[in-house]
Amino acid sequence: MLILAIETSCDETAAAVTNGRKVLSSVINTQIEEHKVYGGVVPEIASRRHCENISSVVQKAVNQAGITFRDLDAVAVSFAPGLIGALLVGVNFAKGLAMSLGIPLIPVHHLRSHIAANYITNIDLKPPFLCLTVSGGNTLITAVNDYTDFEIIGATRDDAAGECFDKVARALGLSYPGGVNLDKIASIADNAKYPMPKPRVDGSDYDFSFSGLKTAVINIIHNLNQKGEAPDTPVLAATVRKRVCDMLIENTLLAAEKCGFKRLALAGGVSANSELRSRMEEACAQRGIELYLPELKYCGDNAAMVGVQAYYEYLDGNTADAELNAFATLSIDYNK
Image (cartoon, rainbow, N blue to C red; front, side, top):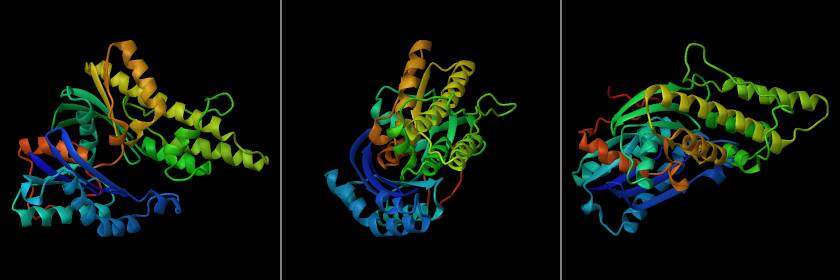
């Protein structure tokens, strides 16, 4: 089944052609350099660039797949969650294309597609399994009971882990994308030099809270500045990274143990973090848990993962008509 997938939830204009789990083409037009000037994504600029780029990106994806638009069986699009203006560009383009071709339109939840990135890399992976999805806007532990059946086990109560990394990076003077650059310059963690709190959510063993960690780092930097001192940026970056990974790994492994999962996956942009990947691999090996990781090129936003998830959404009868709208926020288990 040939699916043209479109992804415009943030600052990447992406399109891909997939056939089941097979990726025939994947094109991404990134806006990183433009947003770097502002230290983060400017929603209005992102939306405008999507408008300018989407036609050429889609055409390139079709050309790279070696097909024509008439060969397509369906059009898929990320419709939630994300920047509302950016999402609307993709949704409206997809609706128009599907209607003009007379083929089904498949709405895909952005976080579901991040989980589906694992299906591209790991051909033998199938539900049920537990997944930790970590990005700039979301952090949650999900039981993937089936390809379109998701149950939230734990989630962040405030900032996402990726947002924490980005804000700490900005406080340290690192350029956008902050989390990526923080990971690159981090050296050896030293909690004695830079004490880090380990926030817990009362009454919930699986939920996360990262806002206090971000505040602690800002306070450390301010206190040093008042003394005329500068932070040891590589060490402070490593200390923050270690604490975030501590929290992500401990909660996820506890959930796997309590819920009886022996298969675990990572997903989302922060799943590319070097320490998270290496430490999770080691921890799972010690516990006899099978760990699945997406290939690095599929960790960030891309349309290939949208197309793969769309295949399973279509098999489950999840299609839309011209009334499809975009949503800035929407739970991953929205269809329950």
